[in-house]
Length: 499
Image 1 (cartoon, rainbow, N blue to C red):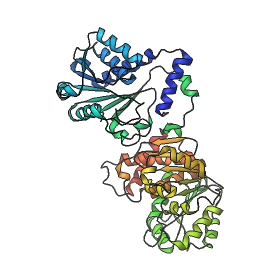
Image 2 (image 1 turned 90 degrees about the vertical axis):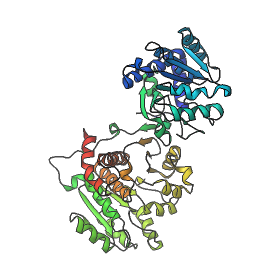
Image 3 (image 1 turned 60 degrees about the horizontal axis):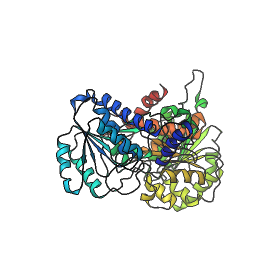
Image 4 (image 1 turned 135 degrees about the vertical axis):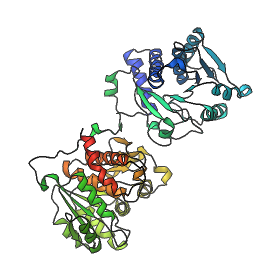
């Protein structure tokens, strides 16, 4: 599903009006009517409820006026509340139409602001049509007071297009914001619906069509996509096959203090379906791995330049390398890590301390094959030499960095952002069962396993992230798991994606 910015949505509406001759009042009418249809589906008998519709002065308020007028067809218990006079022609027109239907209006000012809690207390459903996706300034003054009252006293809040106060482009709260139970947005979801804190404030999201021509949506450039299983294909298991059919993964990692991390990566690759797995590390690391799963092939190395030869001996075109899990930050292995990036001509998945090393020489290397990094915000901040607040949920930066360094970047968070430098994908699967040390190690192995099987790097990254999130959601007691238990749910999650 496409995701748009406020500017892109405005441009689509403009083209629909100017290039296709669709009247702006028709778009507003369809927005309002479609919202009432959603309410019907959610609440069923609309006549059972009373409604309080808060309208801003612009077209979001105009949408609210259409909603209020439509609700009058079901009940007389509808009131429109507004603060400033309506400023757009569409909103002015619908205000007059609403009043001609006998609709009740209440204008709020500083003098009667205390009427708002009383109105809210006597209403079942609140419609937030104050400010829509075009909001770019801080919400303050009487509007901020009203938002606070709504959040405190509303029984059920429905936001029109996006909760008032949430930036459609960054999901940040502009001063204060509505906390909606349900948000009805038009034609395409907005970025602010999927990143935090906007995602938490959106509540249940419904996307409705309002008449933007389908052909217009197809030809208008868009680089932002909501990740669904339609974007990738899980490698098939063939009846006539052997271990070489499903590729090979080599995990380089581990240290004296972190012997389990590379094992988790190897197990993730196996759960993804890869044919052969190797673990390259010190003796303690490889012995621990083979004792747990005898099918793992050990490569004992001391992380000197000569160690690279041991790894190169088992490389072939169907191999994917994972580097970083449990590696530790030791100056004496820095040169070895650099040599891996310079000489290994297969896809490399970089996680944890591998990202730390790569950040030190990222401007020196021209990668021969696609390299994937899977940082959390702290690691990405160090990679980009920026503050965490500057990189967190910064999807534009993820795309720019991926293009600049010829990487696929998966910025791990509650909403994970993935980019290959051309498109940006937002993944919503997963929960706090992944908020544990070691889950990133599993993910790097899962990604490598999928890449090794289908040989398409971006596809493998998207598949791995989506299925790992599904696996976490399948664990019955969220967050009460051993990190290794997620591995047991991966086959079921993969089966879900195949359906």
